[in-house]
Image (cartoon, rainbow, N blue to C red; front, side):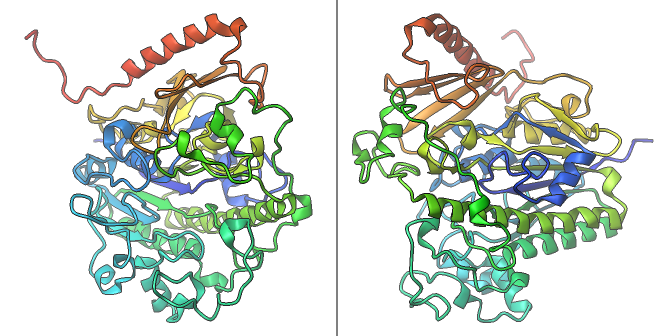
Length: 516
């Protein structure tokens, strides 16, 4: 008799710095994530394969790099004919769910790139009452696109708010184009930090927050699967702590800005970095010479120290709010009696900058703060508890590993490696390098980074710029060695290894079955 296949629960945040777990940082409280780490294994060297939302999220469900699955940056649709891990699980009899943020499609729609994640569709609640999948391999989807009080709110989250009695939910969110500002937002002073939001609590009542909705609906879908006797593959996709830095009380005031310690720019560290890095420290930089169109991060990163500490305090509060809701989901697994049969993975789509290297938020700056991730795996009885591992992980590995752990084969077009043995403590490592892509426009900026246990090499398309860091000697990535003649031989060796890795990651969709 075949053994029972495990369930899979993927829990993700959005734009979370790798250090923001209470078990590694005593300035933040994350008891639910700390519990998962204590009952499972925390991987300290996990990376995204693209530090931008849409391509990274598309990689999580396709097991393919952006250059192959087609969603190579934000504003580009993930083609709906690309195979996904959800399709594999659904075909194997699993109930498949996505609750929360998807962001597989752009905030605009045109022939050939039709999008459900744009206005006015987002606020067409009659449409969303009648649509909950299948979509991108998930049999059931319940979606919300916004971060904090952004105007692109609606979808299933808005329906939920109305069902809960908050029929005036529009008053708590930014207006869409052509609307007047709602009463709750008019005449509010703006500030430079926090994506233009004032440093004050969000007036949305705590119980209507989208993290509460994500947890509640995730639990409901898992309950339905368990009641129906089906294994489940569920993605609980939380929206926070992606800016704007907005949170209701008590989370807004949970952390004291005076206790925050933002990152710093070390004097002279950008002198050896590519021109865009240095330009971020100008008042009004002109990036037209290095970017064909506007790109995330290509703007001035000069910031007020007090505002940065205030933003950081709210950022931490957003994480703690989310953590409480993650705790509800973890508790529900216990209550349903399926915790021991469920693989739980927590991670994020990419990192975040809070002053490190003089930078804020994100951009084509492949420091560890941006591309390295928090990453925890719990599978009672299979994954060692309380362990910390430095075995390299990558988001592209998730689909192949999930399928393998559940006794299912990964299709050939998936480019990740199977990490099951590493997760379960049977193998020291499954990979010795990670590649991170970033192609924000057609030609520029376009960069790729090759990360090994000790070194990081970044190359730029059609440019003679580059970055080379030695983690052992320079863990803070302050001294760029790319143009140092003393490291020419090492750079050449890393370039060769980089090229071999590029060849190695090519997918083989069809097996070779004959000599000709």
